[in-house]
Every structure is written in C-alpha cells, then in structure tokens.
Length: 544
Image 1: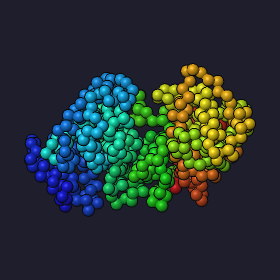
Image 2: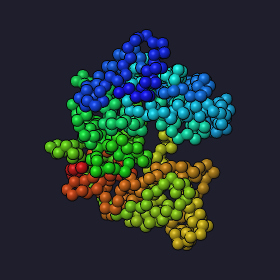
Image 3: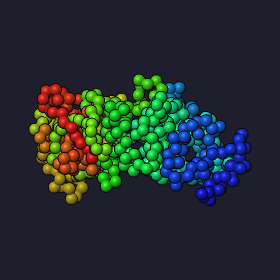
Image 4: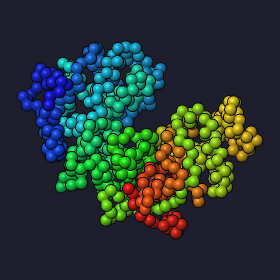
C-alpha cells in the first residue's frame, strides 16, 4: 500500500540525481501482513543495506528557512571538529549561557531554531529500524527534505556537539521533542566512529528510547549490528526473527541469551520502570518501556577492547565478579538464578523526586532521623551513620567520572542537613518534624567547614534518589536505595553475576524481579565473604 507520505517521497526521489534506476523501499518490498516474509526479510536486511550503493532517507517536506538551517548545521559541525580531541574526548567542559551567546550562533528568537526543531521533531529520528539503515550503509546516508538535501556528514557531528556541549542553554532546549532526535544522532556518530559489530547488551541499552510499531522489532531491528550476527554460525535460533512468537517470548529469549552468553546480569539493570506483569515476565526486559530512573550500576566503554564497541559494568561488584549461575530444566517463562538471600525490607520510605530533594523537603529530614535511629545498632558513631546515609542516598555516584561520593568529606552532608533543618524551623507547619534540642545534639553535628569545601556536591548528586525509595532491612540493619516499585516485605539478595544487589518479591514458590538496588556494605563483594564464612548460603531463585 502506497500511503500519501510514501507517494510524496517517491515524487521527490524521481527528481533526485542518482547512479541507479533501482530503489529498494521496505514499505513496498515487504508484505507487512505476511509474518513469514517479514521474518525472512529481517534476516536479509544486513545484506540489503551493506551491499547497496547507498541509503536515502526521506524526512518529509521541506521547512521555511532551510537554507539558513543548512548554514547553522555547517557552523555547529565545525564547532564539533574544533572541540574534539583525537581520542574522541571533548577539549573543554560544557558551555555556559554567556559563552554560548559569544559563539556567533543565531539569536534565541531567530526562526532558524524553530525550523531546526521542526526537522528534529519528525518521527524518523526515533524509529528503531533507522539505526541499522544508517549504520550499514556503504557511504553516508543522503537525507532528503522536500527538494533539499541535508548533509548527513555535517548533521550528525553538529547534533553531537549541540547535545554534549550546550543543549541546556540553547533555544532547542525549549522544544522537548528535539532531545530524542539529538540523542539518536549522537548514537549514529558513535556507531560510525567505533565501527561494527557491537555487543547486543550495549545496543539494547543505547536504543531504549527508539520506537517501533511492532514491539518485537525493538530487538529484531538491532540484530544485524551485533556480534551474534557476525559469528561464524550466524544468529542463534533463539534470536532469529519469528513473528509467530509472542512479544513476551521475544523479550525473554533476548534477556536469557544475554545472561547465558555473557555470564553477567547487567541486562537486568534496564528494568527501571513500572512493570506490566500481566503482559511480560518480571525478569524479561520490556524494551518498549522508557526507563523511569537512572541506573545504580556503572556502565563504561570496555577499555580492554581497543575498538570500544562494548559497554561493561564497572565498580560496585556485589557478587565479587562471580559469573551468573543459571538453573536448568525450568519452564520457558521461568528464569532460575543462584545467589544469596541477604535480608527482608521492613521499612520503605516514600518515593523521592528531584524537586523534593532539591528544595530541602521535610521528607529528607524525617528519613534521616528514622534511619539514624535504625542504624545505631549497626554503626557505633554518628560519623559512620552519616557516611552510610550520605553515600546511600547518592548511590555513591562518581564525581567527574573519577572520585566517588564515598570519598567526599562529611562536611558536604552536614551542611546540606543544616540547611534542611533551618528551612523546616523557619517554615510554618513543620515544627513537629524537628526537635531543636535533638537536632543540635543527636542528628545534626556541627560541620567542620573548610574554605575549599563545595557544599553543593552532596546536593547535586541527590538525583540518584529520584524516583527511588530509601529502605532499611529487618535483621541486619542495612540501609539501601531501591526502585520506586519496591515494598516492605521484599527480599534483598545478591545474585551471582550481578554488579549490585537486587530486590525480589515472593510470588507463591517463585519470585518476581523488582530491580537493582544500592545497599551500603554490600557493593564490593562483602556478601561473597559472608558466603565463605557461612553467614549466607547459596540458593536458587526461580523468577517469573
């Protein structure tokens, strides 16, 4: 079926100067109603795009002021070249608003920004299939907009520069729909620079924001770019496109394959959304979901691989580097993993938001005082309790990708809590939350201030707690930071192959997977020491 949009595209292509009379158009050449044909064509995609003379992208009709837009893209592309080191890193930090205004770019109210926003808001930029269409092309893709051509070789670096260096102060920040497109173009640049193949976990992680009309294509659209597709035997049967499979099975097969082939549970860290258990297994990553909160585990490019096509988890090795242990001979909807049951959640605080955390909300004070009382049985000093709370509430995020929050002085924490306390004392209606005498003795030590201290460091890293719950455990008095979906009574465990502890929930004789969590004193293999000493015992968890 030729839609009006496709008819318009074909009309423009007739006028396009090209070296061949033949054009392969997926919407025409694939019978979308025939599941078998669709699966066969998916397996052929890599050969089609990698052996064709080139790829043409139809963005739709042109926009007013396209000539000035092309000039703007050209200018920002040159900024990208100036700002980048030979190693691919940036020469400088992000631009301030004042610095941005000195770059010679158009004024914020200039219509060229609206034209740019209109182009970037078009759905092409967030379609899952376009990732392989551009990455497999022999030559840079040709982007056609009406009767005009936008240079792919200039748009991609321009978008990467804008996103990395100054999006937060640019006029495009006022057009929310442009952000997904800029992120897509940045991924396209990474694919060009690093080459193929990539590992499947990395691609799935990078492509979570892309869209597909058939949810199974969230996986199938990426396979041609992966290590698996380039292996001698080709894709394993479990990953081959099959549109007779229900979506849940496709997601289960992808999740299980990654765990089996890598020995890592890193893929489970993508489960950062409110689950739909009526539709999908709790442990199978729902690749149609948009993650609702940031990961706790750290992902960075694998420095052992000189081609750097794989993201790996670093730091926070809760399972001591021990690989995942799968339990065999279980039904397909069940994932069996071995690990350690640590404790039970007996207090789960309210879900926190960035606004509440940034505004010194009374919830932070109430959480701190209750946590303090609970942790007194585990830690002997106020400093030790404060350090546990400070590091946990920030997920021990790193500063500038170097220093971690656990390395920072407690003065950051005490100063923040002092501000919370004084705000509560000042604002009416919160007098019952704080007791002045207790606050000045038990809960609020005087910070030993240093002229070099940056008291906003702790505050800036509170974003880790956004859409999460702080929690306390029943028997061993651990403090942790978990997903918003966790509840009192949930199980804290360390699963072999996991970089972080995880939250599980009993469901009959099985468990549902809730998500990763940060637990102070469990992030660096301490549970493995407990296994060796007999404190913890290995057990099998059957996830449904």
